Image 1 (cartoon, rainbow, N blue to C red):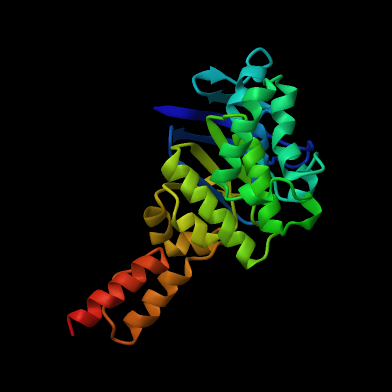
Image 2 (tube, rainbow, N blue to C red):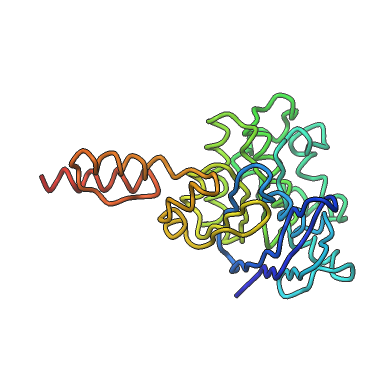
Length: 275
């Protein structure tokens, strides 16, 4: 079942330059899709258009079977949660608990229900022991996990990460990538992640690659990264594990190409056991 359907989408911030040009794609319910592309390719603009934060020039966007228009906008926004780049810009409350509660209070959720919702979603992002901490005392990765918990508390059908790891250190990036993958596997949320992290892309179900506002490639990670010539042409990189596989092959180690380090390690173990 398609939960997001986009047809012939166009948008521009100015008359001189088209930011999004005739883009069409669909996303299946419960899948983990990544959007990649060089800086200025239109990735974040797509996220904002889907969430109704920007108004399209032409084309159609359907969310959960509903066309994105002024009439359906409130219902669609209730179905979509979005986590942005900078976690510091998303904090409202004086404690982690207060911050997760903010959206619930705005939706008039009764207090007796609120505590259970806060505890449940803090546990999902492994932040239970920080509920009474001030956000200023948290690391970047922890702040972003709180932001995710606040969005999850609103029970969205679709969760959009708009380069949510781009401002984090390596440890923080790993924390958020693990949370994303856990949410996908354990809850079955439809996840759309705008990212520069090629290793994250390798773990997704489907990839949309943008180039100068156009949809240049789409498919599974294996399908997209198999076309190395086109990947280079749109100024993207291949996963380190694939590069390592090529290096080993050139030096006489016959292993299959893998998108993830886990896959490459298993292949090397198998190769060694057959020696």
